[in-house]
Length: 470
Image (cartoon, rainbow, N blue to C red; front, side, top):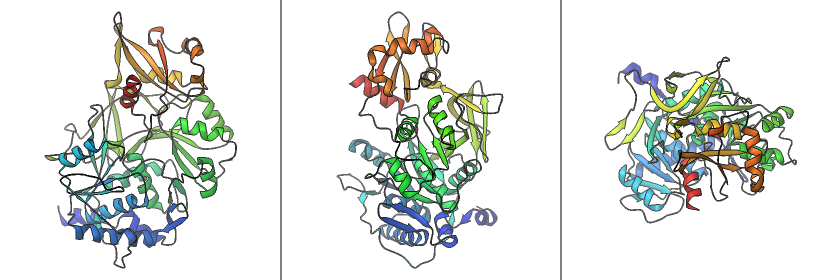
């Protein structure tokens, strides 16, 4: 790398810049504790020293296995300081799968909240309360900084690698539409092993906003009031529950970022009545989070392209590139970029632009199935089902049929599912003028109560497998 290029890529991390620009501003708020940017910076520098002393080297992954907590946030920023790769893994993964990831990626060092029997690695014991008086050093923001595991269409986790420059580009583009400023407070409701959780950390640090940790002792509406939350990332089911709670006026909320597909007309109407700004977006792990974003509309659109991204549609399928595009997938041969010769990433998402310049997502190439010789795109049917006021979410999938090959079925979440005997006839009326008859589900199932959703997107394969299993 030339000296000119290196000087452009060297900078203090957003956390340490925040410690210089707004040292007294609260960086993290968790039950009964406010941590200022100046203190968090000192903790992270001390943690980086411990990681180096333990033998962690630049470019080496550190597996971090825990739910969101202060330690995980500190580890992310400390890895950036020393050039290690922050590699968060869901603690809900079976031990055998965690061990498989450690072996596959030859991970030598692991930190996890609960010590367990992992082989071929050292489990680190770290002092997260230690402070350092040393000054933060500039880092190369173009070197690998973290891995996010994404199941993609194959179901086997791919390790998507980002550098800090990717995250900064994504955050700056997102801020052009959803304002975020010093003193704002964003709830860390998404896990750090999902791109949406990591995006919240970067967005907040860049402007001096506060990351609020969820308080399990409070309802969401209580925490909004107590911590004066300004920004929330939610799925429609969470939004429905929040709006049904009459104890909160949600006065402090400046913006809701809604994920998980189309939002029902009733929910949008209530948000408008309460004068709450809500946004939907199209995003993906490989692009660092948001790609398009716009005000939540009843047509189910995903807004316009944000700055620092490019998007084109070829044969109905979306391709993306830009400053927020990831570095590639971590493999045993290094970081491999699955791009075409012009640097475009093939998303496998089908989409189209409308006359207003808003993107509409039509579904995944690999979710489509054939019924009686006709192509069926589950996402089209799901959007139609979610227009029912009592349906919060819907997943459509194929059930085998001797005559037609496959028939559509649907898993529904919402208050309507309490009256299963009348669902079919009621939804037949709803769908009659919205989708062709062959696309209408022949069977309806209730959303499994034991199915947990970690990010803004539903894991379709896991949900369907859960239903089939039970």
